[in-house]
Length: 547
Picture 1 (tube, rainbow, N blue to C red):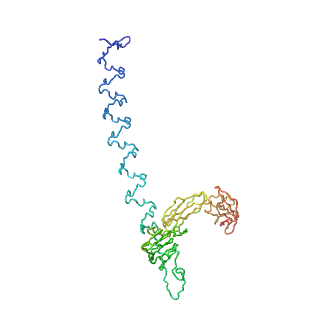
Picture 2 (picture 1 turned 180 degrees about the horizontal axis):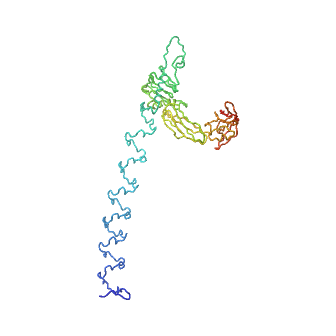
Picture 3 (picture 1 turned 180 degrees about the vertical axis):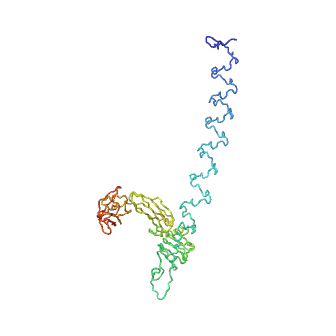
């Protein structure tokens, strides 16, 4: 057997005896190759063919990362068991590759849906049913205009607090729906009582006529109080002065229409009158008081002004029916035009004018004059002689106090920076109408006064000795210790009334006018001085205004 290698002692290594050219083609069999002798360098690039790789010989560690391309994977070769759990990451999935059939039923859970990803077009029509809406999740902004129709409101669920103030207007109230029982004595205090007072007063006026007893000769001399003379004949005189209304008792021997001619008049119906199918034009603010009589067969037209154009008729009604059950005293009578009665406008309207006319209101402030630059606490008191359903005390748009009844107290703290007024206002709601009472708190510079030889003896006094006043006139008391001192007055030049003379202890004392001075706050003062005093004591000075 021919040796392939020989050890060379000269080079200290093995020397090849057989060269490649000496080896015949196909002479090197598998048995001639030593195990592990075929290394990577011995294999040419691309020389390991598919046939050279044994089945199952290419294991995971033999495949380089990312070296298995799409073309290397056979159809249907990647089955579920060949994919490692969590091995298919987002980057391994082609865009739009996950179709509906690739998603398992119930596989898209809440955590798989991105916040804000479910838009309107993703929600199927009628898919949002009642159970899907959380309690209280339908807000005002979710309800379309006009969407809450009558059938959507549960019976009995529109409560009092859901109805806006003044939302129930006149057209919303059915005819004869506002009955006497619906008028709350607490809500409209004194209204019903005043109405009863009004009716009772009218009835008393009627019934206070004493019967005439004739004894002996009769002198035809009407007293012009209860009796008057018309065309030489005595008759009961029409009365006046009842809350500003005249009063006329309708006579039975005259027609209703010819007697109803005066505005702001109470017409007392003691007898039955047939209107004969005619329309009677009622004068402005005519009040019909039924006192035993009735009206039949005709029309009463209540025109607001009844043809009267002057401003005195503004706001008047043509006809006021004063009896709560007026319709029991009318048969076949139609009411037209502007009129007030229990069903059309409510009793409140009938007596608002009476109650409001009687009410007096006022607002007082203590103190009502303060010093400029000095912080002052103002006490305010609003009063009325008739109970009000609402009383508010305001400064501009700021509400300082609110309440009801006959009085209300409030307070404010001010530090005026210049002379002028701080305006307060009390608003009273009486019988549904509003009355106002204003009050100004006046800010003024102080009047300095006192005794001393020099001007500075008085003007430098830190605290003003005089209470705030809008005019320098009035009484001043000065204590002088030791004689030979002047009594000085420093009056702010902005006061409209200045002074020229004074009475001291009851005697006339001329006041000397000196040059104006300006204090540290740049306020100009007029300077006045009495003659020099000679004795110590208490001096009372009465300042008189200029003529």
